Length: 395
Ligand SMILES: Cc1ncc(COP(=O)(O)O)c(C=O)c1O
Image: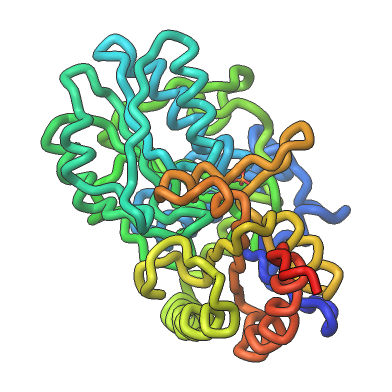
């Protein structure tokens, strides 16, 4: 996992480099040996591929304490979320046509929800606290007799807030409402025990946890209603996701998750300790920085940091840091030449300039204390240079 020594990758929430051990596990399935079979074939090649798929499913089950049959492999977090939201909407429509999602979901939940809205569903976008947390009372008040599904993410990808999903799940269970959580940013970083967690559906993505891109999975609890498929064809994945399986990627996802679980007890506290240093030192070095999300590292997704530097546009900061060899993200996005503020940061009650000026640093396995020093060596000067100066008196 070597990033050029003069470059600093601080964007692990966008994607992670592949763990060499994951690449090694995938290698037989992307080389010219015998492991190229179609898992649906009856012959030896098919059996080998089927066995690999079965092992990958078992690994997911062992890591997150489920049965192997409760996993549907997908092409990533986006597809897992779409399968949950749109697939369940189709299944559950006869019971009611109201769904609830939080205001700070990833677009892979928000946009399927908006699509349902356009199709005549009612959608409630739950407000969050200034720290980016959905309160139980808010959820409770939003539930209606025709509410059939709630989707609230486990940990937010921008501001790192962690939601009380266990308490939410218990509340929803008592009301017979299906509950999905997007755990793309938390799987492999926070302990998740699905045997005890009150969620019916949970999405994960491979490339956020040192696995290959284009892989993910949706947990579908055996006792919960099945989503209707979005893809029709050969009936793979118990008819929930037709299409010849991407065996190498499924193997990679499973191995990546297994390795993350192995490292979790050491890596998560290490990231939290680093995060705490950033939370303390960055605002001291740059007093105009505004923290987005919870103040305590323990309340954030491990490794996540998010600050606004108003009135500077986030994209300008990203580009200037890139010139210094440092890779970070901005929550704002440029749409047709206009900088749109981050919908997540706006949902925390921030101003438009604050929403346009966010920077997310996301630390990972390669991150060290020295990286903070390096950022603090360059960022204050960048912020100072990009901050418009008030005109002084004419001399
Ligand atoms: C919270 C969250 N959900 C879903 C996704 C989409 O996952 P994928 O890139 O695997 O489609 C992302 C990716 O950024 C994410 O951060």
